[in-house]
Amino acid sequence: MSNAPIHPLFDPADFHIGSNLTHVCAGGETPFLRRHDDALARYIHDKSQGSPGRIAQEATVERAREQMATLWNVRSDEIGWVSNVAEGVSIVLDSLDLQRGDNICVMATEYPSVVAPLLARPQPKYEVKLLSPANAVGLAAGVDQNTRAILVSYVSYLNAERFDLQLLRRAADKVGALLIVDFTQASGYLPIMASVADFAFSASYKWMLGMTGVATAYWNRQRMPNWQPVSAGWYSLSSDATGYDNGITLRSDALRFTRGNPCHAGLYVLSSALDYLAQFDPVEIQAHIHGLTTDLLARLTKHGIESSTPEDPAHHGASICLSRSDAHELHTRMGQANVLTWNGRGRLRISFHGYNCRTDVDRVESALLQALA
Image (cartoon, rainbow, N blue to C red; front, side, top):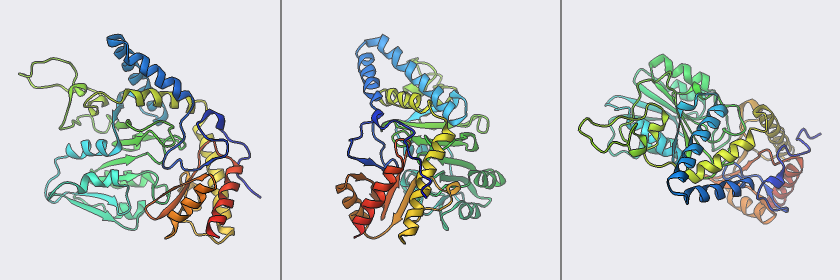
């Protein structure tokens, strides 16, 4: 008997989803909310109003900060904006002044936006420890007295495994290292306590129902009160003075992350998305999605189809991943059957959100079996 919810939690009519489509690729892109049409129209109006319009845009910046702070259970002054996760990670890493003998610990299967900023530097003094097994225990085991930071995605993009952040927090604290977390594959359906991290980031265009161009940057000001980036722009300064005889002064809050104008259009959309999500209890969203993931996993087991995603919903996110050599072909065939999945890195990824229900699991099962046949 299926445990998947019969009805969607979100009204699918609230989204730009075709009536004949099963949209199960939230891990790549979620469909656009129809309410975002109005949000973008407001941005277009405000942008066209000169100085008064900029005041309205900045009011949206602050409102979105408050909404993200509520979602992540932190203070709004700890929320800033970057254009993407890789930019935020790079800003923090640049500020660490890493020396010869220092090391940074990441999983060998970590998402490129988290690890590429480390590996892009020519002839770095520090060591990047790419650790296996790719789980929290394996990552913590690689930490030593020379570790300056642990970088991790809360939920893996590769197989949707959810990692124990408290275990990694303890490992970091034992050696005085930072814990830097990417919440992209979790924020919007899992309750987030961002204060477990020293710094945290998330893209907006997946389960938070936003768009590309703006990502959340969190600075834990209690744990890192004196942190300063080593790069800046006009927006990250505390005043717009044009004289530099006395140097510059950064903003006192997390908007020091934001070196130039944030993506105002993206923030209008993100604020609209967070208003929408606020109608639902995050615990209810999590339970709804896990009803779908566990049902699909059970069906895969029944058909002898192996998944790389942990079975226990306490240890997985909102996606079910199949690591297969024919993943791209399966993705293409299922798309031809109007079931939209995501492909890449040698795996088929099926991701649920609140607009899905048991009927979508039925369609995924049917389309996957037909594709395999």
